[in-house]
Length: 348
Ligand code: NAI
Ligand code: MG
Image (cartoon, rainbow, N blue to C red; front, side):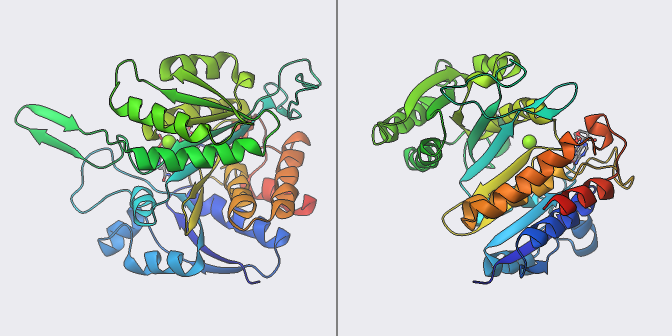
């Protein structure tokens, strides 16, 4: 079997961390074939198109893609639309998996995943090991924003079918985990129609997974709980914007933006991407943390290519490197992007 990967570095630190992730993946998966493709703000400046058709074709041809980050202006620019949002919609990448594994704050020492028999980590602090399953095509990201006279309106679109398919992803993944618990996060007290559809659809799907327990929580409470007692969560399933925000909150427990990985998954192609953006404040300095990008490549191996051994080797190498003290400044260290990558490569 030949594994093919479309590599889309994008802008800013995307160009620095994505080559590291490709190297790591190639080390763990020899024979991996890569194809480079262009997207983002810089691409838009050069070509007038932030997501050229040639890139879309390369993603379709490879099946798997690794995307860095792009710089998107926060003002509307005619002709520009964030390519990652476009890719999610074009390839119907309806599930966004965002795991967080706890690194102990201070020493950033990774803690063991809790189990029912041993719910405490070695330090006595409960271990954080959670997975946010974010609906990735609807909600407030449906792209229905407009002016109507004096009113600025964004429509929040939720369908039962999309809620059911994201629920199936969440329950299937929960079933493979130690705690087998899904928390439905919503705001149905204020949005009873849209979030009512979401909550009821997820609950209905959950009935087919009697071995997985279900809870629900309002999104504001979930934000507070993620900030204060993150170890209490196993799998969280939620709508698009809530998942975007909550995964940034959760990422803090795993070492922050430089470490957080993500995978966009559909029924056809999959696109892995670190959660962070183009980080203009540190771009070009050679100090971006490559761990988020490398862990994203591991998610591709685990969930798309179904190669858990490859994923485990990469993840252990990343956590081993962090634990050994080879850390970029965002984790309190002095290592460069290349230093961390070299350490990870050697451990793979
Ligand atoms: P950001 O994620 O780029 O940066 C937030 C903070 O995290 C900054 O302090 C940055 O230095 C730090 N950081 C990010 N990645 C890091 C890494 N690998 N290592 C160490 N530190 C890292 O978010 P921000 O600043 O809000 O947005 C910057 C640009 O990125 C904007 O144009 C935004 O539109 C874009 N963006 C793109 C995303 C994507 O393409 N998927 C996602 C988020 C933002
Ligand atoms: Mg985000």
